[in-house]
Image 1 (cartoon, one colour):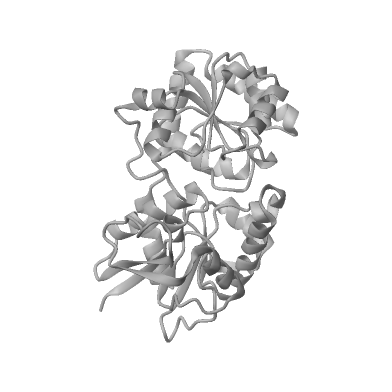
Image 2: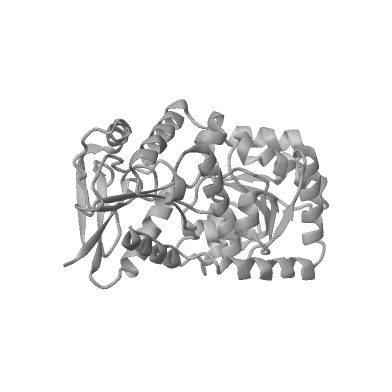
Length: 373
C-alpha cells in the first residue's frame, strides 16, 4: 500500500509572498526526492492561478473548487472546501484545520509558521492578513496534529502566544536548492544596473525590518561603499530612500531593488562584501541564510533567532536601543571590512555555518514527523 503525503501548494499557484512560494517549491521537491520506499507526494492547489505548479515528480495534483482568496476565507471559517483528508502538510498556515480522526482514518494535518509578525508586529501587515493568521492559529490549536516552526526560539515564543503544547516541531528552512553564484553573475548584475562591491541589506520600510537602523550603522561606519537593498515591494522605493536620507546616507550610494529570482539574487550576493541584518523580528531570516550559504560575511543584530541561525557564522551585535545598536553594527562593519584577512575570516565562518541548512534534511524530518504521527 502506498502512503501519500499531500502538500498544499497554494503559493505556487497564487503566491502572496515570494519567499513562501520559493520555500514551498523547494520543500516539495525535496520531499519528492527523499520520499521513503512506498511513499509518494501529491499536491493540493486552489483553482485558477497561472497553470499547474511546476514540481516534477508529483504523483498527482488535486485542485480545489475555490480560488486562493475564497479558499483562504473558507478555511478561516472551517467550512467545507473539498480538500478532503489524508496525510496533509502545509508549508504555511493555509490548510483544512477541521476535526478529523488521526487514529482510525489516518487523517493528519501539519501546518507551518515562519514569522510571528501578525502577533508581535501587527502594524506591519494589513488588518485582514493579521485577522486571518490569528484565526488560523486558533484553528491550529484545536485541530492541527503538529505545528512546524523554523527555530527553537520561535517555538518558545509561539508557546507564549497559543496553547500548542508538545505539538510544536522545529524544522529549519534553507536557501533555494542549488543556490550558487551563477557563472553569468556579472551580466546579471549589469542587467539589474548594480555596481560591484557593496553592502547588502534586505527588507522594506516597516519598523520591524529595521532598515533605518541599518542605514544609520553604515553612516556611522568607516565603510564608503554603495548600498544595495533587495526585497523592496513595488511602490516602497521612496520610503526606503527617505529612511536612508534620514540616516545620513547620500542618495548616490543607494540602490533599491525588489524581490529577485534565485539566480539573480545569488548574483547580487556574489558582489556583496557584507550582508547587514539589523532586524530583531521573530521570523526566519531567509536572506541571512542566503548569505551564509554563499559565504558572504554577516553582521547582524543580536536576537534569539539570529543567535540560533547564525551561531558562530557571523558577528552578532548587542544594542539596548536603536541608537546603540546602530553604533555597534557600524563598528562591527568597519572592523569586518578593515582588512582583507578580516573579511576572509568572516566569509569562511559564514560558509561553514551555511552548510547547516538543507531542504533535503528538512524533508527527511517532515517525513519522520508524519510517520511518528
